[in-house]
Image (tube, rainbow, N blue to C red; front, side):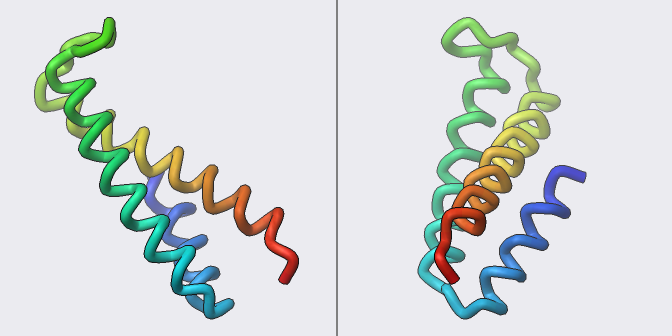
Length: 79
């Protein structure tokens, strides 16, 4: 469910023709996914150790943060 709004914004940005923002968003999403999955799977920095459920939690967290970042870009973009 967290992926649907993020993918809609990716498609909107693709339609606008701003491929650099879309590529940067994808790279940042992957890096956030790696970071949060690691943190939630193994319970680092005071976060709970969730095991395999931590992979899903990390992925959902990265999708939500990417969505919020894309939303901020679309709101502040002058086009």
